[in-house]
Structures are given as structure tokens and as C-alpha cells.
Length: 390
Image 1: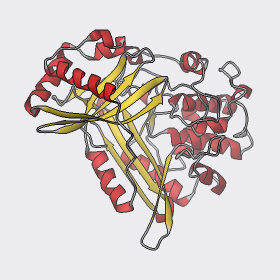
Image 2 (image 1 turned 180 degrees about the vertical axis):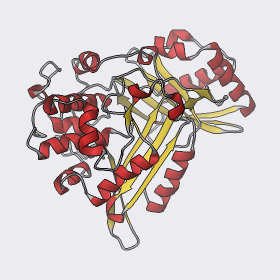
Image 3 (image 1 turned 90 degrees about the horizontal axis):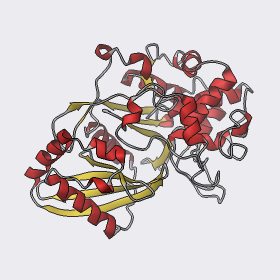
Image 4 (image 1 turned 45 degrees about the horizontal axis):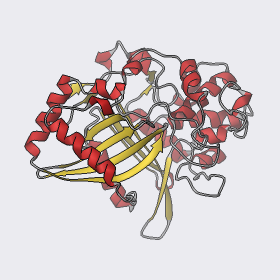
């Protein structure tokens, strides 16, 4: 999901041309959305709007294998209650960029991709970019993504249906394409200096708190041996069968693009970790564990080791992911690991109306991560074993 920077840059380009203002309320373009008169375009791009994230799971629930429309996404999530008052908190939400993409279409009078291709992609030297729906039948021309159940064998990952990734992850690009895009940030060759500054300036919420996010990028910083401070623009990406990392250090004229077609691969995160170490980037802080959540995760692992699952605590979508094949693969991957030694809660946060828990699990022979999402009613929406280091 590295492509929010394209949407953010397109909106900023429209702002430069006087077609809109970042401080315009969303209601000027999409009055039907919930509290759209209180939310600004700026808050969409800085992830402080309060709109609930519509795409939180790291797998594709059944409905997302089928076609949808942008209108349907905005109807279901853009007209729902906000998770918080606009501007008062930061929360990552893909819905923000779907809304921004739709505003782009209304203002420009063009299809999202038509505008991007002419104004951003071609000037950046990206000549073969396509949209995901246009490539669903062209398997031979595109990388095939893979996933696995537990640590079982690789299996071809399904693809999201048309329009589910609109304006936030629907571009098909190569590593060279993304590198060309990164070079435009180093050279500041497409947008104005003011726009590039906005994308690389940390946002704030109404109480003055910092967000760690600019527009389309997470922001980090480090000081080199000469005590010169450098800003790092960073965004990870993960979608069914694929994983990616992108780092840009504009003033050091440095960029790193890592794309893998296996969502369980540790290649991108390991390379990014080594780069992070070289640049002196700190690891995220862990929070105090919640024993009740750790106990439930332990229980889930014990069930999976026996190829069983208590479906009463799962959502419909989560239950459907635990097919007989999945249970077999997970059991076969857990059996050789020996005794389960510990389950540690590393972090928890709210996202998309759900609670996300990240665990580190230690067996006698191996350690790995678990990513869990819980619905408000307590049912598990996702329980995914992740071999890649975080």
C-alpha cells in the first residue's frame, strides 16, 4: 500500500493550480459523507479525519474477491459514524485516500488513473504503470503473489476484486517505477517546493500533539556523524501475496525500494532493518502486555496445533479463512517447533473500528509474530501467523 503518496501528490498539484484548497471541507465535493462539513482535505491526507478504515485485514475476506464500486465503499464507510472528532487524533485509514481519490476525479473531471498518468507518472518516467483491475487476466505479465497458512508451503494468493484498492493501492508498478518516483522527491522535479515540504512535514492534531505522519508518508529522522538531521520518508505495503518497503532520504539523495511477491517473506523487512540500523532509526516502543489477550492467543495456538478451532469466537470472514487446508498447513508448521514457551503482547491499537494486537510468540525451536484483529463484540476478525521480523 505504498501508493498513497501518488494520491497525496495529485491533490497537492490541484492545490497548486488553484482547483481546490487543502482547507476545503470535504462537503464541498462529497456532501453526503458523514460530518463532511467538519473534515478538511488536509485531514484526509494527514490521517486525522476520523473516517473509519475500510481495509484493515491482511487477508482478503470473501466479499473483497468480488467487484465493488467506489460509491459503495464511500456509502458503507464514508457515511458511517466517525471513530473520533476530526483533527483530534491520528489513525491510519485507507478510507481517507479513497475519499481523496474521488475528490480528485470530481475536481479534475477525469478518471483517477488518467490524471495520474498525465500529471505524475509520465513526468516521473513511469511509462508502463497500470491499474490492478486492468491486469486481472494478464497473469503472465505480472508477478504472482504467494501466501501460506502458518509456515506451510507457498500457495497462490487471491487478488482483490476491481475498485477495492482505489486510490490507495491499485497501481501495478515495478521496483524501477517506484525508484523513478522516489527520484522526483530527491530532485523536487514535479511539485513545488512548498508541496514537497508539506508531504515531508509531520502533522499535528488539535491539542498540538505530533502524528509521525506527513502526507502519504510516515516520517522518521536521524542525525549523521556530523550531527546533521535528516528526514526519512517511509511507507510499508502489504496486500494479498505481496509485501513492500519504500524509504526516501531526500537531502542525502538516498532511496530504497524493496518489493517481494511473498507476503511471508522477510527479505524486505530484513533489508529495511539493516538500513534502519545504519541510519540510526529507533524501533517502536512496546506497551505493557495484557494477560487476558495473551491467554486467548495461547489458546488459539494450542487449538491450531491440533488442527482445531473454536469458530464461535471467530467472525464469519475469519472462520472462512481457516479452511481444512489452512488448518492442516498450520498444524504441520507448528508441530516441529516444540513446546510453546511464551506469548507476549507487543502492542495494541484501534484501527478501522477494531482492536489490533501484535504478539511475539516463542517456541523451543522458533519465534514469530501474530497479527490479530478483534471486532467490537470481541470476536476475532484475523489471527495470522507472521514469520517476517518486525
